[in-house]
Amino acid sequence: MQKQNTKYIFVLGGVMSGIGKGVATSSIGKIIQANGYKVTVMKIDPYVNVDAGTMNPTEHGEVFVMESGLETDQDMGNYERFLDITLPPENYMTTGSVYRTVIERERNLEYKGKCVQIIPHVTNEVINKIKEAGRKTKADVVIIEIGGTTGDYENQLFTEAARQMNLRCPGDTLFVMLSFIPYPKKIGEMKTKPTQQAVRLLNSAGVQPDIIIARSERKIDDKRKEKIALFCNVEPEAVISAPDVESIYDVPLNFEKDGFGKVILKKLGLKNGAKTDFNGWGKFVKKVHQAKKKIKIGVVGKYFNTGDCVLSDSYISVIEAIKHASYNNDVVPEIDWIDAEMFEKDKRNIEMLKQYDGIIVPGGFGSRGIEGIISAIKYARENKTPYLGLCYGMQLMVIEFARNVVGLKNAHTTEIKPRAKYKIIDLMEKQKANLRQGIYGATMRLGAYPCTIKAGTTAAKAYGKSKISERHRHRYEVNNKYIKKLEKAGLIFSGTSPNKKLMEIAELPKSKHPFMLGSQFHPEFTSSPLHPNSLFNEFVKSIKK
Ligand code: GLN
Image (cartoon, rainbow, N blue to C red; front, side, top):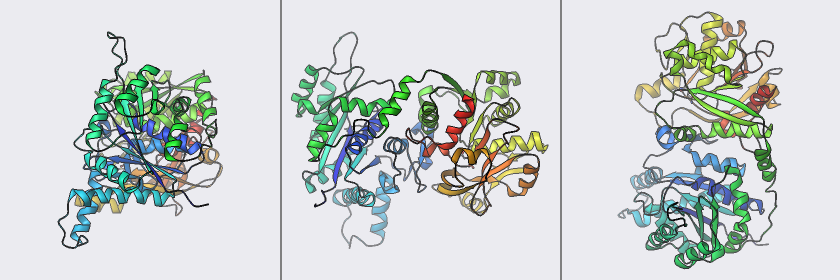
């Protein structure tokens, strides 16, 4: 049988942002994947930044680290989690990265004396990158989410490239617009006008959506569907209702209920082969809705003046990993954000940690709230509260141990105290040169590295194997000079780089603490609903006990 042409689906935003384009894109992927096709998903970020590594997470959301080490947008995490796949770096692009390639080509005389222009040279580069992602992943269907909203100055380049692709690959491209249907209470009716105008705006860029996903507070009725269909030039069945949901995991199943799978496959000219359970997804969603028993987890960090919604964007992979592990263990996680500075202001505040079944210290940078975090770690160790430290959370756990168990007073990380007497956490040699020269972008220790696990430890029990691979994003490391001292006092380095030079996991023995473990890597980046990360899983299990 002749292989089908690769299909390309562009997902664009209409009306406004923040209505769940990443989850909608992931869900489209999930549906097509459940029909037996190989799917890959790309994110286009219209920013001029070359990657997301230099962006502040409280402004832009979490920096998601790919296996390759590329620092990307949090949506890449959504794609990997929903589709349970690992994506290559080709699947992420920004305005900055595209221009960088074009400018490099120009400097190398690759345009042979031509005047290099946005159209066709930059748009060609965008198209090349999209096709390359399809080739690299051997996907039947490539889904491309264009960041921002239709009409944004920033994403016009990408909409234009999508328009040209539609001309070049007739029958193989599809446009999906995610729009918003407001429901003003005073009017008491769902209004479709903003969607009509967003489609017109898109039309003026030469693009006609084939499918419109209508996000709204509640399910949209047939009358509204017909109206959108008539005014926006789509068939009524191609208007998909996407009401607010209790859990994001419901979205693919809800889309399917509205006939999304059938519509999109028909439009792509692909056969329908849906597995009703979506390969186990339905079973997980059932667990999400059935779990009753609550566990309370306190995430301790440096947060100030940031609303809940900002934090949930900054730590989305951590939150998701907690949920995956919890629901798979039939418990409901309740997550609180605890500002560590309150433990610095008044030492007695530490007693508030009593209410938590488990404590997590996530990754981070800089000095704010650090002493408060160290107090919280001391509390978890002394009170035998299950503790999971992620990257910075591991480094600070080792510092707390050095100070209060080994007795190395004022032990510290050189990130905060370059002249500390006991430099327990220090810069790697290569990093010293980077910082001296001020080279910050993409120079941390990034991406997946192998790690060897010591037998008989909590880490070994969690992973059930001796060789693992996890993703990193840090500059500092446990200083090898102190390893003997730390080990002698009872700390176990249960995970190391294969050459044993880098300490990747630190833990206390079971005889001393039910679960006190920190990893230099970020286990949250490899967790998915169907495959919760092993460390989060073991952490939740220890809480359940
Ligand atoms: N700031 C620490 C380092 O650079 C930890 C980084 C992190 O938690 N991601 O090593």
